[in-house]
Length: 326
Image 1 (cartoon, rainbow, N blue to C red):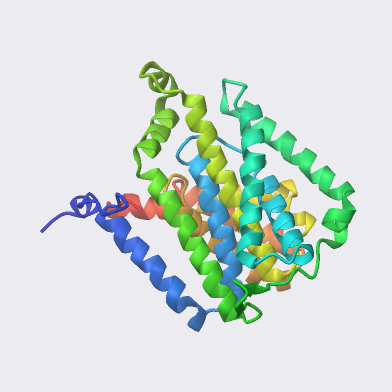
Image 2 (spheres, helix red, strand yellow):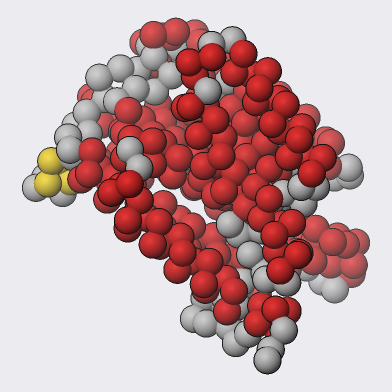
Protein backbone atom coordinates (compact mmCIF):
# COMPACT_ATOMS: atom_id res chain seq x y z
CA UNK A 1 0.00 0.00 0.00
CA UNK A 2 1.30 3.43 -0.89
CA UNK A 3 2.55 5.52 2.01
CA UNK A 4 1.00 8.85 2.93
CA UNK A 5 3.98 10.66 1.46
CA UNK A 6 3.65 8.80 -1.80
CA UNK A 7 -0.04 9.65 -1.76
CA UNK A 8 0.78 13.33 -1.34
CA UNK A 9 3.16 13.19 -4.27
CA UNK A 10 0.56 11.63 -6.55
CA UNK A 11 0.13 12.60 -10.18
CA UNK A 12 -0.49 16.29 -10.70
CA UNK A 13 -3.83 17.41 -12.07
CA UNK A 14 -4.71 20.21 -14.44
CA UNK A 15 -3.67 22.89 -11.95
CA UNK A 16 -0.52 21.06 -10.96
CA UNK A 17 -2.12 19.75 -7.77
CA UNK A 18 -1.03 16.66 -5.92
CA UNK A 19 -3.60 14.04 -5.01
CA UNK A 20 -3.84 15.32 -1.44
CA UNK A 21 -4.37 18.88 -2.64
CA UNK A 22 -7.12 17.76 -5.00
CA UNK A 23 -8.85 16.01 -2.11
CA UNK A 24 -8.52 19.12 0.06
CA UNK A 25 -9.85 21.31 -2.75
CA UNK A 26 -12.81 18.97 -3.19
CA UNK A 27 -13.52 19.30 0.54
CA UNK A 28 -13.39 23.08 0.26
CA UNK A 29 -15.79 22.98 -2.69
CA UNK A 30 -18.16 20.78 -0.66
CA UNK A 31 -18.05 23.32 2.17
CA UNK A 32 -18.93 26.11 -0.25
CA UNK A 33 -21.86 24.15 -1.66
CA UNK A 34 -23.38 22.72 1.52
CA UNK A 35 -22.15 25.30 4.05
CA UNK A 36 -25.10 27.72 3.83
CA UNK A 37 -27.53 24.89 4.68
CA UNK A 38 -25.83 24.37 8.05
CA UNK A 39 -24.11 27.70 8.79
CA UNK A 40 -25.47 31.24 8.88
CA UNK A 41 -24.80 32.66 5.35
CA UNK A 42 -23.73 36.09 6.66
CA UNK A 43 -21.03 34.45 8.79
CA UNK A 44 -19.90 32.35 5.83
CA UNK A 45 -19.66 35.37 3.53
CA UNK A 46 -17.64 37.33 6.08
CA UNK A 47 -15.33 34.35 6.58
CA UNK A 48 -14.85 33.90 2.83
CA UNK A 49 -13.94 37.58 2.40
CA UNK A 50 -11.26 37.27 5.09
CA UNK A 51 -10.15 33.87 3.75
CA UNK A 52 -9.50 35.39 0.31
CA UNK A 53 -7.72 38.33 1.96
CA UNK A 54 -5.49 35.95 3.95
CA UNK A 55 -4.83 33.71 0.93
CA UNK A 56 -3.75 36.78 -1.07
CA UNK A 57 -1.47 37.89 1.75
CA UNK A 58 -0.01 34.39 2.02
CA UNK A 59 1.13 34.61 -1.60
CA UNK A 60 3.55 37.33 -0.50
CA UNK A 61 4.71 36.18 2.90
CA UNK A 62 4.43 32.43 2.40
CA UNK A 63 5.80 32.04 -1.12
CA UNK A 64 8.00 35.13 -1.63
CA UNK A 65 9.01 35.88 1.95
CA UNK A 66 7.84 39.51 1.86
CA UNK A 67 6.38 40.63 5.19
CA UNK A 68 3.88 43.43 4.61
CA UNK A 69 2.41 45.40 7.50
CA UNK A 70 0.28 47.53 5.19
CA UNK A 71 -2.19 45.16 3.54
CA UNK A 72 -5.09 46.88 5.27
CA UNK A 73 -4.61 49.76 2.81
CA UNK A 74 -5.52 47.56 -0.16
CA UNK A 75 -8.35 45.77 1.63
CA UNK A 76 -9.81 48.99 3.03
CA UNK A 77 -9.49 51.12 -0.11
CA UNK A 78 -10.96 48.27 -2.13
CA UNK A 79 -13.97 48.33 0.17
CA UNK A 80 -14.33 52.12 -0.09
CA UNK A 81 -14.05 52.24 -3.88
CA UNK A 82 -16.29 49.21 -4.35
CA UNK A 83 -18.88 50.65 -1.97
CA UNK A 84 -18.69 54.16 -3.47
CA UNK A 85 -19.13 53.00 -7.06
CA UNK A 86 -22.02 50.74 -6.08
CA UNK A 87 -23.81 53.49 -4.16
CA UNK A 88 -23.16 56.62 -6.20
CA UNK A 89 -22.37 55.29 -9.67
CA UNK A 90 -24.95 52.48 -9.39
CA UNK A 91 -22.55 49.98 -10.91
CA UNK A 92 -23.38 46.32 -11.23
CA UNK A 93 -22.09 44.54 -8.08
CA UNK A 94 -19.57 42.57 -10.12
CA UNK A 95 -18.24 45.78 -11.66
CA UNK A 96 -18.09 47.45 -8.24
CA UNK A 97 -16.07 44.51 -6.88
CA UNK A 98 -13.85 44.68 -9.97
CA UNK A 99 -13.28 48.38 -9.23
CA UNK A 100 -12.11 47.39 -5.76
CA UNK A 101 -9.69 44.94 -7.34
CA UNK A 102 -8.46 47.61 -9.77
CA UNK A 103 -7.83 49.90 -6.80
CA UNK A 104 -5.73 47.20 -5.16
CA UNK A 105 -3.85 46.68 -8.44
CA UNK A 106 -2.98 50.37 -8.84
CA UNK A 107 -2.02 50.85 -5.21
CA UNK A 108 -0.07 47.60 -5.15
CA UNK A 109 1.90 48.66 -8.22
CA UNK A 110 2.78 52.02 -6.69
CA UNK A 111 3.48 50.75 -3.17
CA UNK A 112 5.38 47.70 -4.40
CA UNK A 113 7.56 49.79 -6.72
CA UNK A 114 8.44 52.15 -3.85
CA UNK A 115 8.99 49.46 -1.20
CA UNK A 116 11.02 47.12 -3.39
CA UNK A 117 13.46 49.84 -4.39
CA UNK A 118 15.11 49.36 -0.99
CA UNK A 119 17.06 46.11 -1.22
CA UNK A 120 18.24 44.26 1.87
CA UNK A 121 16.54 42.80 4.91
CA UNK A 122 12.80 42.08 4.87
CA UNK A 123 12.28 44.54 7.72
CA UNK A 124 12.76 47.42 5.28
CA UNK A 125 9.87 46.24 3.11
CA UNK A 126 7.67 45.72 6.19
CA UNK A 127 8.44 49.18 7.56
CA UNK A 128 7.87 50.98 4.26
CA UNK A 129 4.53 49.24 3.66
CA UNK A 130 3.42 50.12 7.18
CA UNK A 131 4.32 53.78 6.67
CA UNK A 132 2.51 53.95 3.33
CA UNK A 133 -0.57 52.25 4.80
CA UNK A 134 -0.67 54.73 7.66
CA UNK A 135 -0.63 57.56 5.11
CA UNK A 136 -3.66 55.96 3.45
CA UNK A 137 -5.41 55.69 6.83
CA UNK A 138 -4.93 59.38 7.65
CA UNK A 139 -6.13 60.37 4.17
CA UNK A 140 -9.29 58.31 4.78
CA UNK A 141 -9.80 59.99 8.16
CA UNK A 142 -9.62 63.42 6.54
CA UNK A 143 -11.55 62.65 3.35
CA UNK A 144 -14.92 62.47 5.08
CA UNK A 145 -16.77 63.36 1.89
CA UNK A 146 -15.55 60.12 0.34
CA UNK A 147 -15.19 57.76 3.32
CA UNK A 148 -17.83 59.10 5.69
CA UNK A 149 -15.18 59.48 8.39
CA UNK A 150 -15.87 57.61 11.61
CA UNK A 151 -19.42 56.87 10.47
CA UNK A 152 -18.13 55.00 7.44
CA UNK A 153 -19.57 54.77 3.95
CA UNK A 154 -23.08 53.49 4.65
CA UNK A 155 -26.09 52.29 2.69
CA UNK A 156 -24.03 50.48 0.05
CA UNK A 157 -26.59 48.58 -2.06
CA UNK A 158 -26.13 44.97 -3.10
CA UNK A 159 -27.83 45.78 -6.39
CA UNK A 160 -28.84 43.37 -9.12
CA UNK A 161 -26.38 40.96 -10.68
CA UNK A 162 -26.06 41.76 -14.41
CA UNK A 163 -29.19 43.83 -13.99
CA UNK A 164 -31.30 40.69 -13.59
CA UNK A 165 -30.84 38.88 -10.26
CA UNK A 166 -31.47 40.80 -7.05
CA UNK A 167 -28.83 40.16 -4.38
CA UNK A 168 -30.90 41.35 -1.44
CA UNK A 169 -31.36 37.69 -0.48
CA UNK A 170 -28.47 36.36 1.61
CA UNK A 171 -28.51 33.07 -0.32
CA UNK A 172 -28.20 34.85 -3.67
CA UNK A 173 -25.41 37.07 -2.36
CA UNK A 174 -23.63 34.03 -0.94
CA UNK A 175 -23.51 32.33 -4.35
CA UNK A 176 -21.73 35.38 -5.80
CA UNK A 177 -19.28 35.62 -2.89
CA UNK A 178 -18.52 31.88 -3.00
CA UNK A 179 -17.93 32.00 -6.76
CA UNK A 180 -15.58 35.00 -6.52
CA UNK A 181 -13.71 33.45 -3.59
CA UNK A 182 -13.26 30.17 -5.46
CA UNK A 183 -12.07 31.97 -8.61
CA UNK A 184 -9.57 34.01 -6.60
CA UNK A 185 -8.37 30.99 -4.64
CA UNK A 186 -7.90 28.91 -7.80
CA UNK A 187 -5.96 31.80 -9.36
CA UNK A 188 -3.59 31.72 -6.37
CA UNK A 189 -3.27 27.94 -6.67
CA UNK A 190 -2.40 28.27 -10.35
CA UNK A 191 0.22 30.93 -9.64
CA UNK A 192 1.82 28.85 -6.89
CA UNK A 193 2.05 25.73 -9.07
CA UNK A 194 3.27 27.53 -12.19
CA UNK A 195 6.93 28.02 -13.19
CA UNK A 196 6.47 31.61 -12.01
CA UNK A 197 5.48 30.32 -8.58
CA UNK A 198 8.53 28.06 -8.43
CA UNK A 199 10.74 31.08 -9.07
CA UNK A 200 9.00 32.87 -6.19
CA UNK A 201 9.84 29.98 -3.87
CA UNK A 202 13.44 30.04 -5.11
CA UNK A 203 13.61 33.76 -4.28
CA UNK A 204 12.23 33.08 -0.82
CA UNK A 205 14.74 30.31 -0.14
CA UNK A 206 17.86 31.93 -1.62
CA UNK A 207 17.51 35.20 -3.50
CA UNK A 208 21.25 35.64 -4.31
CA UNK A 209 21.26 32.23 -6.00
CA UNK A 210 18.13 33.14 -7.98
CA UNK A 211 19.88 36.33 -9.12
CA UNK A 212 22.94 34.32 -10.13
CA UNK A 213 20.69 32.18 -12.34
CA UNK A 214 19.64 35.28 -14.26
CA UNK A 215 16.24 36.02 -12.71
CA UNK A 216 15.20 39.66 -12.23
CA UNK A 217 13.99 39.00 -8.70
CA UNK A 218 12.63 42.50 -8.15
CA UNK A 219 10.28 42.07 -11.12
CA UNK A 220 9.02 38.73 -9.79
CA UNK A 221 8.43 40.17 -6.34
CA UNK A 222 6.61 43.18 -7.78
CA UNK A 223 4.29 40.98 -9.86
CA UNK A 224 3.53 38.80 -6.82
CA UNK A 225 2.81 41.94 -4.79
CA UNK A 226 0.44 43.27 -7.46
CA UNK A 227 -1.48 39.96 -7.62
CA UNK A 228 -1.75 39.88 -3.81
CA UNK A 229 -2.92 43.50 -3.56
CA UNK A 230 -5.44 43.07 -6.37
CA UNK A 231 -7.11 40.10 -4.65
CA UNK A 232 -7.04 41.97 -1.33
CA UNK A 233 -8.95 44.82 -2.98
CA UNK A 234 -11.48 42.32 -4.36
CA UNK A 235 -11.97 40.88 -0.86
CA UNK A 236 -12.52 44.34 0.62
CA UNK A 237 -15.03 45.34 -2.06
CA UNK A 238 -16.94 42.08 -1.55
CA UNK A 239 -17.23 42.74 2.16
CA UNK A 240 -18.55 46.26 1.53
CA UNK A 241 -21.22 44.93 -0.83
CA UNK A 242 -22.21 42.13 1.56
CA UNK A 243 -22.58 44.30 4.67
CA UNK A 244 -23.55 47.57 3.00
CA UNK A 245 -20.78 49.56 4.72
CA UNK A 246 -17.09 50.38 4.40
CA UNK A 247 -15.45 51.67 7.58
CA UNK A 248 -12.16 53.06 8.83
CA UNK A 249 -11.58 49.79 10.64
CA UNK A 250 -10.74 48.20 7.28
CA UNK A 251 -7.81 50.58 6.63
CA UNK A 252 -6.52 50.64 10.22
CA UNK A 253 -3.17 48.98 10.91
CA UNK A 254 -4.93 46.49 13.21
CA UNK A 255 -6.47 44.93 10.09
CA UNK A 256 -2.97 44.32 8.76
CA UNK A 257 -2.18 42.61 12.05
CA UNK A 258 -5.28 40.45 11.78
CA UNK A 259 -4.38 39.13 8.34
CA UNK A 260 -0.89 38.28 9.60
CA UNK A 261 -2.44 36.30 12.47
CA UNK A 262 -4.84 34.53 10.11
CA UNK A 263 -1.96 33.43 7.92
CA UNK A 264 0.37 32.37 10.73
CA UNK A 265 -2.34 30.56 12.68
CA UNK A 266 -3.62 28.65 9.66
CA UNK A 267 -0.22 27.88 8.20
CA UNK A 268 2.11 30.18 6.27
CA UNK A 269 3.23 28.79 2.94
CA UNK A 270 0.33 26.34 2.67
CA UNK A 271 -2.64 26.60 0.33
CA UNK A 272 -5.43 25.89 2.82
CA UNK A 273 -3.79 27.44 5.88
CA UNK A 274 -4.95 31.04 5.28
CA UNK A 275 -8.50 29.79 4.60
CA UNK A 276 -8.54 27.91 7.92
CA UNK A 277 -7.03 30.94 9.66
CA UNK A 278 -9.62 33.26 8.13
CA UNK A 279 -12.47 31.07 9.31
CA UNK A 280 -10.92 30.69 12.78
CA UNK A 281 -10.44 34.42 13.36
CA UNK A 282 -13.93 35.22 12.03
CA UNK A 283 -15.47 32.58 14.28
CA UNK A 284 -13.65 33.94 17.31
CA UNK A 285 -14.75 37.50 16.63
CA UNK A 286 -18.33 36.36 16.03
CA UNK A 287 -18.84 33.97 18.92
CA UNK A 288 -16.72 35.80 21.50
CA UNK A 289 -18.40 39.16 20.82
CA UNK A 290 -20.75 38.90 23.86
CA UNK A 291 -17.68 38.98 26.11
CA UNK A 292 -17.03 42.61 25.24
CA UNK A 293 -13.55 43.91 26.07
CA UNK A 294 -12.37 40.44 27.03
CA UNK A 295 -12.47 39.36 23.40
CA UNK A 296 -9.00 40.75 22.63
CA UNK A 297 -7.55 39.11 25.72
CA UNK A 298 -9.00 35.71 24.85
CA UNK A 299 -7.94 36.11 21.23
CA UNK A 300 -4.40 36.79 22.37
CA UNK A 301 -4.39 33.69 24.57
CA UNK A 302 -5.71 31.51 21.75
CA UNK A 303 -3.17 32.89 19.26
CA UNK A 304 -0.27 32.38 21.67
CA UNK A 305 -1.44 28.82 22.30
CA UNK A 306 -1.68 28.16 18.56
CA UNK A 307 1.78 29.59 17.89
CA UNK A 308 3.34 27.53 20.71
CA UNK A 309 1.46 24.34 19.82
CA UNK A 310 1.33 24.63 16.03
CA UNK A 311 4.55 26.41 15.04
CA UNK A 312 3.90 25.71 11.36
CA UNK A 313 0.26 26.68 11.71
CA UNK A 314 -2.67 24.32 12.03
CA UNK A 315 -2.59 23.12 8.42
CA UNK A 316 1.21 23.04 8.35
CA UNK A 317 1.37 20.73 11.35
CA UNK A 318 -1.39 18.48 10.01
CA UNK A 319 0.39 18.25 6.67
CA UNK A 320 3.70 17.40 8.32
CA UNK A 321 2.15 14.67 10.50
CA UNK A 322 0.13 13.06 7.72
CA UNK A 323 2.65 13.53 4.92
CA UNK A 324 0.01 15.29 2.85
CA UNK A 325 0.86 18.50 1.05
CA UNK A 326 -1.89 20.96 1.93
